[in-house]
Image (cartoon, rainbow, N blue to C red; front, side, top):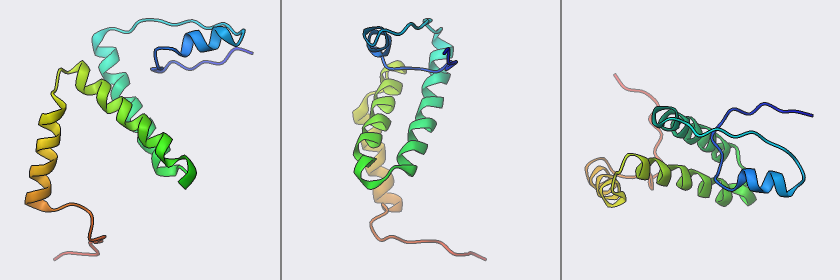
Length: 106
């Protein structure tokens, strides 16, 4: 039974599909399509992480990291720059360790 997917996949997925005795069609995306597909994949993986059961959370977070790494590589952004910005924001606004919830403001 044919299933339509039309989404970014990991590089070895076609090989894995074919090794399982199934067929598939793949296309190489343009740079702009790839950029948008990465952003879509980031949202997809973040949702999966948010909905993951505790025993599957590490796997889902690893997927989020993989997409972030791909975005950084695609845009030629140094990971150290992102980590420095993270630390700067933590110093300026704090992290999330205190478990604070904002109920209202006036």
